[in-house]
Length: 29
Image 1 (cartoon, one colour):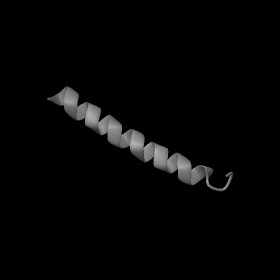
Image 2: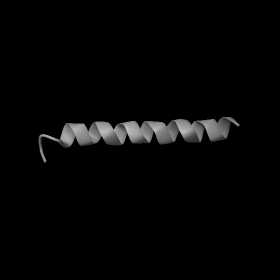
Image 3: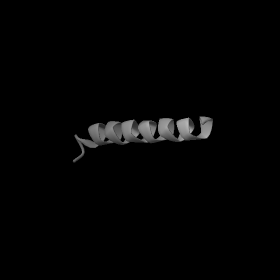
Image 4: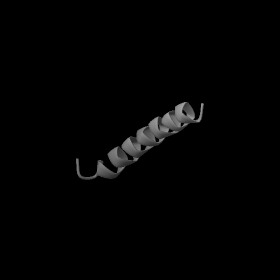
């Protein structure tokens, strides 16, 4: 699990980025 921690963190960061972009789009419109 320790070796995959970086990969898991990268996946979570990517998902959070996608959600944030979607929220920004909703707020923009």
